[in-house]
Length: 139
Picture 1: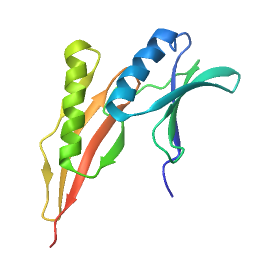
Picture 2: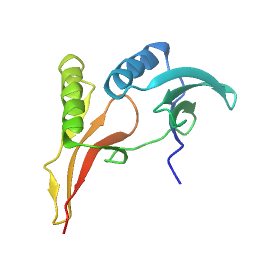
Picture 3: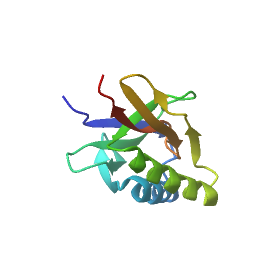
């Protein structure tokens, strides 16, 4: 099994061209996502393509939009802590010019068998993204 997609819903009238352009600029630059508008269930959705395997996040409007006031998140696993650090630096550069970028940094979680190096980022979408690497240690 692998991840295929996630749908994120917004209040009606939220997915303006301006909002979509801001989402595209940030997530395209930071994570390399690609975007397109596509008709879905009687409306024009915004498709955020995450990789080459067909994985995507679909943005739609709804009368009952998603609410995620806590730290609900979707995790992105990277191969190395250095990759995570590059992404964090890029998010911080974005935050310096756009205060809507939210970042939550974490100390490494170190156990005898595993070190998790991570941060959370949230920008315009109603969910956090947990960007992390997991370094396994031989017992």
